[in-house]
Amino acid sequence: MKEIVAEENESSVNAAPIFEFNQLTTLLLWYLEEFNGFYAGNHTLLCPSLRKVDVYKSTKLNLFRTHSTRSSNFQDDKHSVLKQQPLFIAEEIGFNCYDTDDASFPYWFLENVHTLESLDVEESRFKKIFQDKGEISEKTHTQIKALNLSELPKLQHICEEGSQIDPVLEFLEYLDVENCSSLINLMPSSVTLNHLKYLKVTKCNGLKYLFTTPTARSLDKLIMLKIEDCSSLEEVVNGVENVDIAFISLQILILECLPSLIKFCSSECFMKFPLLEKVIVRECPRMKIFSARDTSTPILQKVKIAENDSEWHWKGNLNDTIYNMFEDKVQ
Image (cartoon, rainbow, N blue to C red; front, top):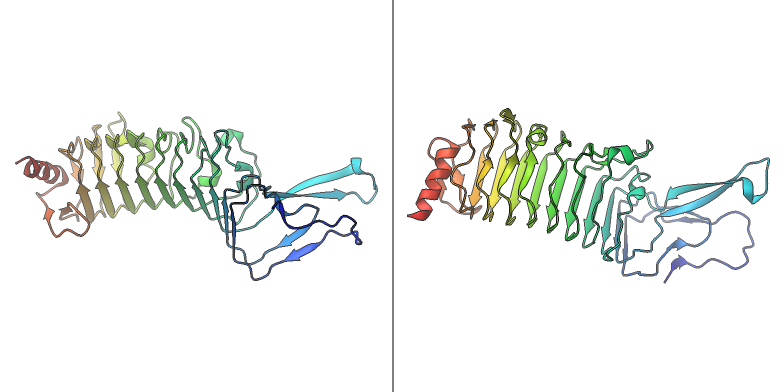
């Protein structure tokens, strides 16, 4: 199937048809390997209630419709103006199974869907998703709040090292990254994440650290940080700067199944967690202390070794607590 509605050979009307789906809220386009779009000819597609679009194994879908607009003074084609508009306007969009080796993320779509708030990219072979700020056109207005990246084995960069924060990510609040085994770093040191509230990283075995010091210092609104099953991760914050780092909003920290993790931060940074109240550290056998310097956690009173486990540890501060937990394990 190439189109949903077939184009008539001889149209009896001059105006392009208008298709209205006023009650449509969710559109799933799955396993349509030859699918190009809704209708081959010029048309208007109205879906005012559409909130979610899911594209799965439909890599030939033309995400734009092209309109030909002619000036009133000219009637010949050479004076036509071609305009591209997004085929769908939605708040949540998912791209799935772009599984060829030369797959390229359709970034230009993000430049035009200004209502988009949530983006899911799964089971694809993209090497890069977002662009350097210098490569982006000034018309970019999309600013997503939630980004989910899953099963992307070739993804090396969310943003490349040296790039500035992509305007699409400027107000990102929720980031979930899972099974991206080629990912070299989560974000380059040049990127700040001033609005990020929730971060979960799972099974990203290429990562040796999560943040550099400058990025860590931008995480003023981060409430929850969960890292699990990342076999190469050695530290969460990496850097040589001896500066204060304050996670002023962080309440929940979960570190699970990190066999290479040595410290949360190995540099001589003084770390502050004024609101931290829940810490879980499980199966991190190399982690003997929390940080190279003392860490301020004024309201934290216990560290658990599992989410549902009643056992907890506390020795007055995080460093002594982690050390005590390690000693208990080797005895």
